[in-house]
Image (cartoon, rainbow, N blue to C red; front, side):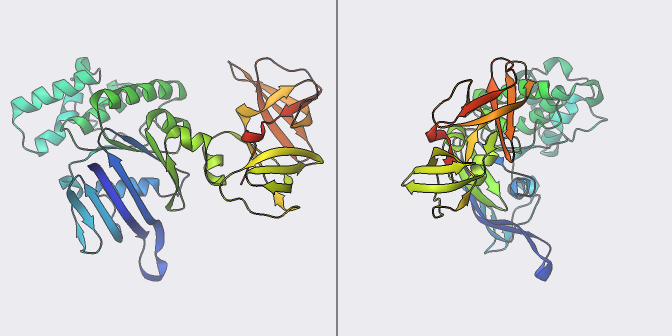
Length: 357
């Protein structure tokens, strides 16, 4: 049985002629013990979908079920308020009470539910210990680091054992180094506790690292969904391919197509590629092939299925160099283990990784 089911959800901002559709028929589910990431650019509807599930936004049509309980039914005009949905919610800003201690912040939801004081103390102590916060119960939020504040917000969401925890950009307020550490901590915590979680993020690396399944939203609709590996390695659309990785786009023309086998022309050089999705176009049509940056191989000598371009610059990334090759309107990035000297290089692109949509 699904912990969360959303069916054909429509949500508008505004009414009548001024209505702005935000969700345009979104359907999804979340199974017990599963982590689903809502991924997409700003304005795609991912946060609105999370808030609709939480009861903080009112959809127009569709339905939302938490377990066997229907919390929203557009056809029957029924909507359960947020406080009765029993969901754990971690806000982007953490939203901690500045005048309450860590213990009191975490205990607040249990106090609202009129739980006995002894049980509150036990439950709060347990969840703080699970998150490595047991020694910080008497501190105030301003006495904590960003990572500790984030864990307090998670503890507050977990303390009453909700069926689903909702995470709205949970790592966005942390600096880059801390984000990587928190990402690993959050994934480990979710797996260890067997949580069912729905997480909003705009960071594809974060979504791939933490989630079991990704729902990529585009303009209020689900563009594609699947495991992180399938989304990255077998995108069905150009939008998915571009959003899920670091890519090179090449200006080119279609020479011929035989099923998935495609031949393209890029500035006079013919390259073999692979058609993905439902590519159209006739020979001579303008196209924009795509290849992941990490799939480009750099050669100092002539290579098969390669573009010859001069080196423009190299940037040091610590574990590798990112090199930019450029000529006219053609620009290609590739990774190298060492800094390259000036000159002409052949940038080899495996046919199965040079995608044409």
